[in-house]
Length: 506
Image (cartoon, rainbow, N blue to C red; front, side, top):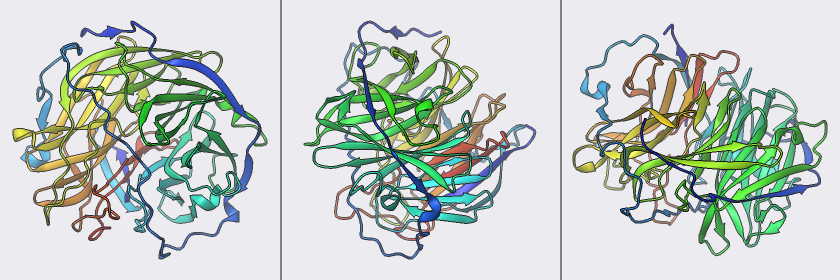
């Protein structure tokens, strides 16, 4: 992964509203206490350490329903929102308000032992915290490494035998604290491993808790959480997950809401939560992968999911009221341009494709000034053989689409996009791109606030080789995320953590 910094240089459709209960719950639960840890107690992990490869834990099963005539009608046919990348067409022009790549440096390297790597990051006033499967790294903003810590060591006092995976990290600008959420699963139990720093410096004291995910409130549900989303607003921490039985069957999507006041005490004391589960669309259809949002501002809390059907004609917007008392949630299905999952991504150097990740929302949407910004990958191009990065923004007051753009080009594949929005509502999007004549590299594009289109793909780090690594399975995994985060001390600067091929199979 490469970590890059962007600096901004002066730059009503029909819908289906809630018709039936769209979730079960809420159900309250709690744990009595957590533990305190200190990053200074852990030895920095040497980059050359020879780890034993780990099998894939992320299940991420495709749980789409067949297309039905009862689906909400799309606002436009597939391809109506498609634009050819202006950089590839060589029709680019300078656009006022565009982001400029100012510098880049190594983020957190592949050590060859865990797929998918799940790169993600957050940025604080003076630090960057990057996470990948099984470890995290603290850096200053010039890229100087301060600490790299194995998650299994970090959580050893929190949960006996912990083997954390699938990490997420946020910097909560409201509380000026860092929050990490990892997963752990056994044959009969699952946990969110939740960590909170004691201040805005990720070095030093953290409080850790192990919150059981096999419970809905206090009742055993017989399933565990996979592929969590982590969002927040000024009141609460919101963790979504896909819930699987211990036999591996998908049950439903779930939301856990935690009052942030529980997390920010002087000691790691009691944490309480409310669970909402069996989440459905506005028309009552079971969904897979609901993403919570990262909120700038204090509007009604929102979440988003893509269609549960093989062909998407709508997205579902969820709104949560009374999150820290007795939460309730509504859902509205909003018609958008028709979309489908892309094929896996081709690459230069051979016939093996890279897992392109389907059209599910991989990264958390961003809420700012009443608009929810989201990105995902969709199929596109001649014969629908290629894939685009699709940017969608919604007005959360009117439930109307503001922007709906899919940018791509024949012979190119765009996958695992991440989005961030600066204080002036300029949008930066990062993603991995490969092509029939291109190794998988790190790219970004942008949408200035006063421009209606994306500015075209710009290289952060070109791919340097062919990638095929399965650890004996059948899927050439990539992602499951990339990262994008606004600098809270300079709200026109955005940092990106983007996966690319550094050398063959790395």
